[in-house]
Length: 106
Image 1 (tube, rainbow, N blue to C red):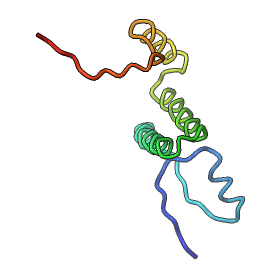
Image 2 (cartoon, rainbow, N blue to C red; image 1 turned 180 degrees about the horizontal axis):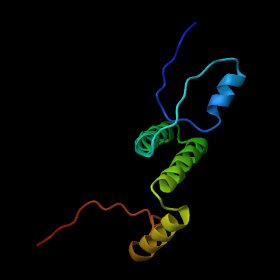
Image 3 (tube, one colour; image 1 turned 30 degrees about the vertical axis):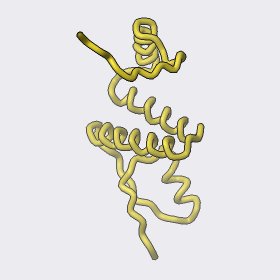
């Protein structure tokens, strides 16, 4: 018998998928504070995976974690989207592909 330690936040159905494969898993439910900390870790993990692979699947995982963070922090995707729209209106988007190289002051 071998054991692999993960100590990471996983999607809701992962324990049932593991057990359906004939393996046993040990899990517990995080407190609100622990959950937010693990979500922040998961954001970094998913971002690193996307940066390495550039796959849309990894980008979708990143979006899933972002949505969970929004809810865990007491907000909504609609509120975040409204903030995004206001910033886009005031400061623009990233459509023009502008690279700022220097700002010179006199």
